[in-house]
Amino acid sequence: MGKRVAPGATQCYLRTVFTGMGEAMSEPEREAITPPTEAAERPEQGLDPQDWSELERLGQRMVSDMMGFLERIREEPAWQPMPEASRDFLRAKAPRGPADAETIYREFREHILPYRLGNVHPRFWARVMGTGTPLGMLASMLTAGMNSNASGLECADAHVEAQVLSWWKTLLNMPESTSGILLSGASAANLVCLNVARDVAAGGNVAEEGLGGAAQRLRVYVTRETHNCVRRAMALLGLGNRGLHFVETDARQRMRVDALAGALRADLTAGLVPMAVVATAGSVMTGAIDPLDEIADLCDEMGVWLHVDGAYGAILAISPRLGPRLRGLERADSLAFDLHKWMSMPYGVGCALIRDAAAHLRSFDSDAAYLRQYEKGTTAAAWAFHKLGPELSRGFRGLPVWMTMRQFGVDHFARIVEQNVEQAAYLAEGVRKRPELELLHEPELNVVCFRYLRPDLDETALDRLNGEILVALQEEGTAVPNPALVEGKSGLRCAIVNHRTRRADLDLLLDATVRLGDAL
Ligand SMILES: *Cc1c(COP(=O)(O)O)cnc(C)c1O
Image (cartoon, rainbow, N blue to C red; front, top):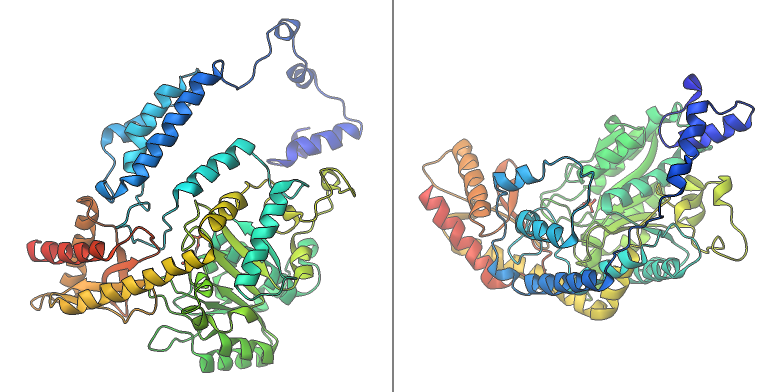
C-alpha cells in the first residue's frame, strides 16, 4: 500500500477503493479489524452514566452555579492572570483511565472558570467581544443534548437555521433569494464570501481547474482599516496579500471613493481583474463605516463585486435610529457579519449572505456518492449547508440564535445597540472632561480610543506609559480595554458591545486610568 496512501482523511476511503481494485488486505490489517474471540466475549459498553440520577443532580448544580455566576458577575474581577498551579494542572498527560464527573467539575471551578477571558463581565471592552446571555447558555446545552450535525440533512435544525437566515435577510434588507449560511464567525464568513467572489471573477471552474494565471491578475480593494481576516482570506484563497490594493482613507478612516475609482480604472487599463471591493461597516479600530452607497454605485458602474465586512456594524441595521447609517449595505453582493458580537450569542456564530445563490452553490457544491440526495428521508434536505461552505459536519449554531432572538425580540437588541453607542459618546465626554486624558478620535459608533497624557513625556514615553496603564487595569481586575493605535498615537481602546455595561462602569474606568497614570 505504502506509496499509494494519501495523507489524512482520504486514507480510509482510498484503501477501500484500492483494495476493491484487487489488492488483498495484509495479515496485520485483517487482524486489526477482526476481534479475537476473547474480545468478542467482553461485555459491550457505552458512554452513558451508570447512575443517571447522580449525573442529573450534578447537572442541576452546574446550571444553578452558572446562573449564580452570571447573576453576580459584576462582583468578580474583570480578568485575572492564571496562577502557575493551574497552568501546571493543565499540562497533565491524556488520561488513560476514568475520573468522576464530580471531580472534573470541581477542577473546572478551580482551574478554568476563574481564569476565563472575562467577556461576560460588564467592564470587558477589548477587541469586539460579545457578552452572551443566560438563555444562550441554556440553548447551547440543548444543542449539545441533541448533538445534531447540522450539515443540512432533513431535520428541524435545517429549518431553524433557514428561518434564522431568512430573518437576517429581511433585517438587512437583502432579497429572500439571497443564499446564506451560519459559520463560526465573521472570519469564516468573510472567507466564504470572498471565495465565491474569487470564483466568479476568475471565471471557468476554479474548484476543478485551480486558479492558474488568474491568481496574478485578481485584485481586491481594501483600506488600512480593513480587518486582518481579509488578509488571511487572501492567503487561503491562493491570491496572496500582493493581490490587495490599499485604497486611501479620509480623515475619518473611511475608504475614499475617488481613490477607489482611480485604482479600479488604472488596474482595468493595466489588464488586471478587480475581484471585489471589501467595504467595512464598523471598522475594528475606530468604528468607521465606509461610504457604502457611493461604493455600491461605483461597483455597479464598473461591474465589480461589492463585499461588505459588517462583522459587528451590520447589526446597526436593526435600529431604526442608527440603521440609516448603513445606507447601501443592502446593495452588497456578499455580506459577512457576526452574531456572537453585538447580538450577544454564545461563541461562535457568524453569517455569510451571498446575493447570487447559484454562484454560492457553484463554489462549494459536491457530488460525492455519500452525499447523494433523495426526495424523501434524511437526505431530502432543502438546505444542504454542506454545499455552501467548507464544512461538512457543523454544530447546530442556529438554535441559541433562534431562541435568544425569540426571547428578547429584535427591538430589544436594537435598544442595546443604541445604548452601547450612547455609552461610547458618554465615555468620550468623560475623556474630554479630564485634563489628564486625550481623545484619539471622535467616536463614530461604539468604539472609543483615548490615552493618558502628561506634558513632560514625549511620544515614546507616552506609548510606554499607556501600555503600562493598560496592563495594570487588566491585572488589578478593574477593566479590560485593549491597545489603541490611531494615527500613530497609542492608548486604550474600548469597543462596547456589552449589554452589561453601565455608565458607572465607564466612570470607574476613567478614574482608574487617571489614578494609574498619575501613580506609574
Ligand atoms: C471581529 C471582526 C472580524 C472577525 O470576526 P470573528 O468573528 O472574530 O472571526 C472581522 N471584521 C471585523 C470588522 C471585526 O470586527
